[in-house]
Length: 263
Image (tube, rainbow, N blue to C red):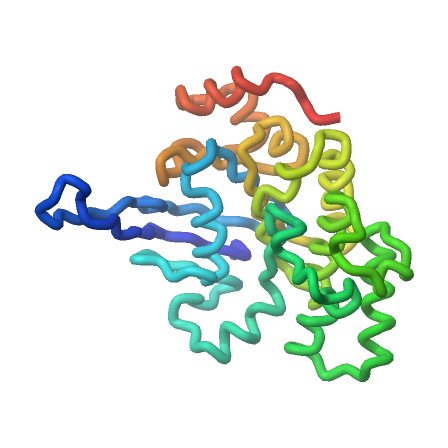
């Protein structure tokens, strides 16, 4: 059984009134009848240009926004039928790493409190146990334990993203949506983060949906690649299939535009 099963997932967003009068309204299909599976332990790379619906799809899967129609199954459980309390429990297994490591971290909170927040919400732990867990998570992502007393603005972009990854790992999740996690970083720092994510996957058996507009990054990390264009998955296959024998013209244009491979 796949870890995650997506069937006919659709998200419509309403458009405002027409600027030409008449009050005409419409809707945009941000995600349009999308279906795919993700197997346990794999990385599915989701690639497409900005505005293609990638991030919306990632948030739909985690129910950070609600779909218009379709189904989402995680370990055989229907996520859309899950109650608030059931989703709260499922959040332990499903986490997200955001694109902007600065915007996603509360600037008023020390790193220790940022990483400990999910532990406070979901775990019954003593303060001492939380501190030890935070120190362990910082070590896992390559930061010194002394970082726990500092604030997000005191770190570089790459270090802040490591903090974000530590927070996502706090509850030992099975599945992580990585939403453009290196697009705000320069190439060398982004490569370090991608390598870290690969190491963490091997160590903890993580499953990723890795969202990116960069084919070279996805090609480096992903087991399979899904190509998204105007809300639809236009092509999906193994990384080798997609990068060496693309079937869709949009996939070929992505490959032609970014021929380099991440080091």
